[in-house]
Length: 420
Image (tube, rainbow, N blue to C red; front, side):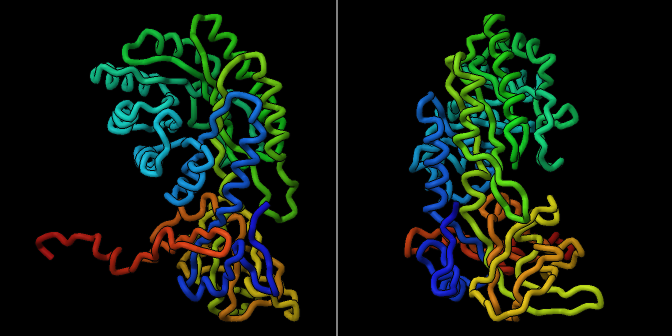
């Protein structure tokens, strides 16, 4: 569910008219709905209200401070994958004891920051990282709480670029040798083993992969306890998908997902930690773009818009389908099949291919739906195209939560050597 709907033929974000908003901030721009963010968090939290659970929002999905703070106000913690995201979480007011640090390539400086902040847990992904964290924590006379991310070699049935739980993926330690890594962790100074971590992928739309992974994880917790490790929490990752449209089956809702989790973990007495990202933010955001030209080629008609792959890379990177809606309904327009493409000088610069829609006209605004996750965070300044604004709405009011950068600001970041 989201809070983008037509009123008198004009698409609104909650009660904000998107035509009026575009006149104020220009196009393209991202727009996020407070009501959608909070509703999605509340539904997820309610699904686990009868167990001990910490919901750590995955900042990698959308790390705008306003989005983080909106979710933090509902009780969200944070799952971070860099020192920068850790600083963002702290700046948004998320307490250290609700922050998980994931990722396979944490630097010494990032691990030191995690130790200094006293975060809830570091999800370790290799023996080398474990030993580095130990040396850093011991040198500071501190103790870092750790869990080991285990790789169960389970196919999440998702896009190959966002699958993380197969043997050929770079993430985690094979579950077949994770016991020896836990034995090493228990011996190293400066570390306290507290949990186990598993995350098998993103945009998962079937429950079977979760069911298989969580059953394996629960058995592994019992094995670790038999080895003497006091496992008090299980980090079950994130990955629950959202409906993007395009004729795909809808993913399971959080309550169905929760039933699978509880079935596997009910007798373990562990605190459950989750890392939802896309399921909270994905349908809470849209990208609004303006039609520049209609170009008719020999074989295709192209709708050329002012947003490009540098603004939303998901269609070309993941072959992702995003619904595209007119901001002003034009029921009188005839249906056409077009490619919606951007101005970037790449053949891969498109938002939709062979998409059937009512014929747009130059100047029309289009809303690219389900763009709240992995949209703005994956944007770039390719072709010296400045990052676009981000707007947060709440009922009938809106706020600019990231201004549009100017090309001059990008150029000013460059430095000429003394011989030029």
